[in-house]
Image 1 (cartoon, rainbow, N blue to C red):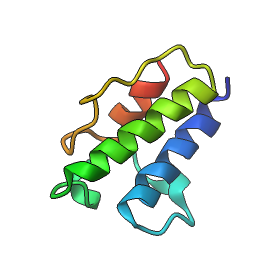
Image 2: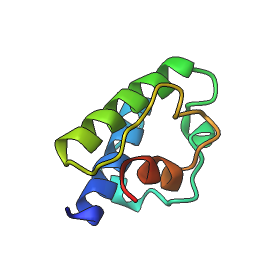
Image 3: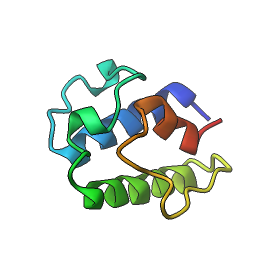
Image 4: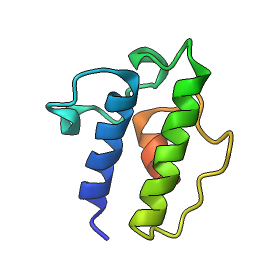
Amino acid sequence: MDKVFISNQIKFDILNISGLPVNNSYNLTANTSLKSIGYAEDDELCRKLEEKLRRVAEEYKTGRKVAEGDVSKNLTVRQCIQLVIA
C-alpha cells in the first residue's frame, strides 16, 4: 500500500468535493480544517467525503472502516487521512 499516493488521493477528494481547485492538491497541508475550506455550512459535503473515504479504504484494502458520522467539519486533513490509513 502506497500511503503517499492514498494521502494525495484523499487530499484531491477533499478539495474536489468542496469545489476548490485540485491542480496542486498534494500541497494541501495536514493541519487544514475541513471547516476552513467550505465544509462548515454543508453537512452534505461531509457525507459525500465520508462515502469517498469509505470507497478509497475499500479500493486500496487499507483494513480501515469509515463509519457513518465519522466525518465532520471539525476534522483536519490529517484526521481524514487517518480514517483511511493508519
